Image 1 (cartoon, rainbow, N blue to C red):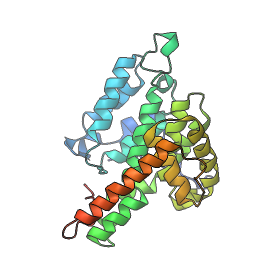
Image 2: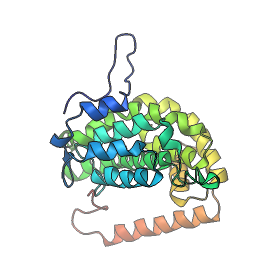
Image 3: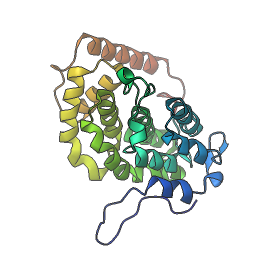
Length: 265
């Protein structure tokens, strides 16, 4: 793999996200491991994420993102794919929906929402809880044995900088997907100062969204940051929280051997 990661300069010590074409052309995709082999098919699929056709973009998202997504793991090819996805978030093609030819449905399912959802899911697969779980099972050298996860975690500020502008996007689904993606990214020590901003957006999400996963993500983040969420929960939130507590209790009472929690992979 060539040097397609973030970069710093003397005048700008903060990491920058390379241009998406630089990432596409400058990465040795065929040499990178995926859960199914190597990433030689990734460049073509990633390029199609910017195709004018909604159906081609949708198929490309499935082809490219599923190629590096398996069992909540970070693979060698995951990191450059994540950088490429972050780099194209502001491309006009990603703002179009799957029904771009119909004015009434133009932004129904923007490609940008799909990309943000994937970035968020990937960030949760490399979050602090996942690392702590790995260290409990495999010892303190867990991250040393998982260089791809470490690489992704090191790039969280770069990816966050690409996600942040969409907190105030005109499309609510994009706004909420950006927030949920940013929550695990903000665990990086250089991003903790953004939590007040994220908390404000989490309050807005909870006042408007009915998406179960996104509401749970926002509530969990606020609780982790020390906010009182009692006035933000609705009846469905409480029922979902109680169901999760029952599941955790069942798992704890039925565990065997060293498996004191759900397996990592």
